[in-house]
Image (tube, rainbow, N blue to C red; front, side):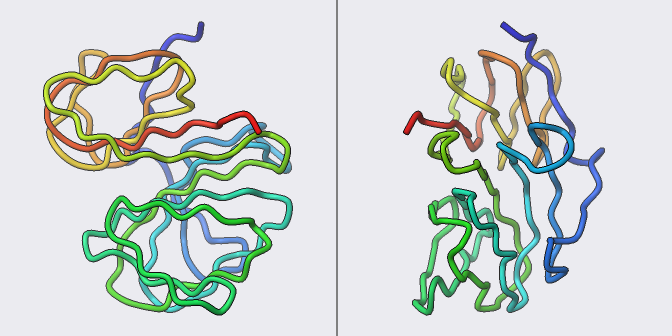
Length: 177
């Protein structure tokens, strides 16, 4: 079992989307170079813009913006509230309809790797991650793990870990198909 560790969001650098229409901060990529099988990132969204098409990739998107997020998916309007999740194929035509800047969390996996799952979990006291967790991302609150305080976007990898405090985390996992 790997040793749990934290990646600090503030130490990561944002990069442009593949289509240049927005930015994202990658917190996990496997393999580290070339085409990915698994990728976890936090994107900045808000202005009307299309998502980059990613054929062959299954995507789960969790809205982090407090105001929610309005999308257009294959021509249909979809309004999502904070922490709501939308799962879609990377070949879908998806765009942000516009609105105030905010963030979303994206878990993307190559077809055949499994089904991406994002779940918002309220922590009130103590939370222990399930064994099949890929990562835990801090979304809000006053939380700590591994003897250190955690802030927005800080991500925990590498096995079961206890998180203490009060707040909200996103649990990222990949279910077998």
